[in-house]
Length: 198
Image (cartoon, rainbow, N blue to C red; front, top):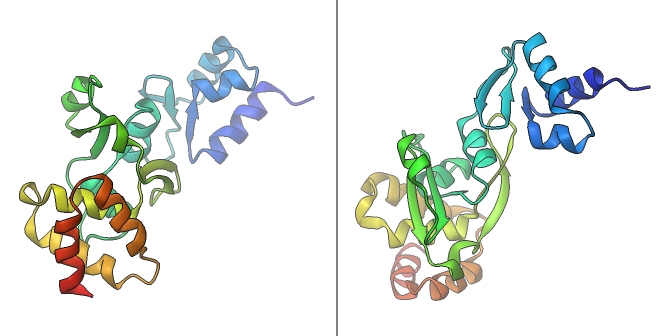
């Protein structure tokens, strides 16, 4: 018979050192058993319902994603995850739907963008962080649209590098880019950049 301890050991190994209360309970393991395991293995509570093994690397992108289910990694952070920037942004950027109370995120230094409900899920995709953890972020096309619509608040070199690098990518999808741009009402701006760079 498989013990709860061996199930939790496997979950920690599969989760790159992370253990989520929600996932543990789904396995039929009680919160009491989880608490005992966390104590015995000196795991750190890094967020509500999320524990990290002492010998594992913390992954801030993953932690923000797990705890804030409605926050989608975006803008500079999405550029980093798609390897469309030469440097990591100091602050994590996320997008949430309009009306979402994001004060808890802002208090933690997360840069929050709020958008209309009809474009909030546009381009949402799952990627892996550099530590191998699954997170939700926008795809390359949505990220480029976000950068163009937010150009005046972005570092100009980061912006130029991202757009140039995207245009060089063989996997780029210009049809999708234009579709997103129309829905985000920035198609004329997108057309200007694609004409210059193609």
